Length: 396
Image (tube, rainbow, N blue to C red; front, side, top):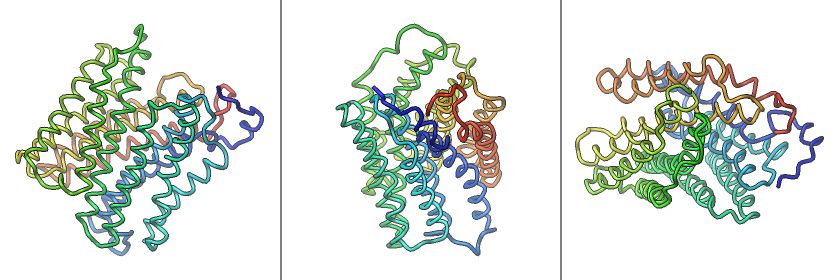
């Protein structure tokens, strides 16, 4: 049971009362700015300024380990309080952790020495894992231990990226980033498998809970971690027909999940169809990778962007929108324009995955514009919620 000194909790600046506040806001602002900056750099408008490793290295790294990991940390540091009944980080510890994350973002942009950049960067996932591990260990909640393991593996993947950066080895950098991407897919498998069916049944007022499929869920998690390991070792960076079997199996497993969670009324609730649409991109990404490994597609880029833009970022936007409402004491009704934001991100994913194949410049600019508008709407509508106290007067 949580024991919180209400007076002390309410004295904390609202932005630092729980982990979702600074990391959702910081991650969303990074997303809002990073894609326009990347497009400018891609077209050569920022040739006089180079972050660590160059703009491509910055883009690959920051969209995953900067943006994606910030949202993962914000969600976990908030959810763990509900899972364990123990108070999570708040106040100065949250502010310090957010400061570490922000310092790493700045250090990468200004091309700080690796002796500064690496400790800042790796400290964030490891500190998050340590906090999660401590709270879960206190109540012996073994069910959630795999989350700590995935966080540690994400730090290891980040370390591989930095090893490649230090050696100016692009292949090593890709190994680290691709491994990180599929570790985020593993996290989507864990968290999505819990919240999507739960939110769906609650949001549509369906009785009971979705029937569990423990073995299937464990197989999907294990398969996602295995793909990440294969990426980190470099084995999966070139087409390998035998890997097509693994990715196809993952695609089938995730598709079966979507079928099991489906409800005919999904389309009526923006906070629900956005979650299911994002998870569907994970299915597409798995089959896309299977096709690439079979030699059916020339590049893995569309499949990877299906996962990162449509899947990871789509799930992030939908989850942030719902969690922010619930944890600021509001009704679970997104503010005006947010449903448009969900649709824009889906359109952007379609443009990046498909249109960019036949019209690269148009596809990238349309995808970037849709992405920027989607996260701009989130920052506009949710930014004030994240920096202000709960509307019901409770801590958090």
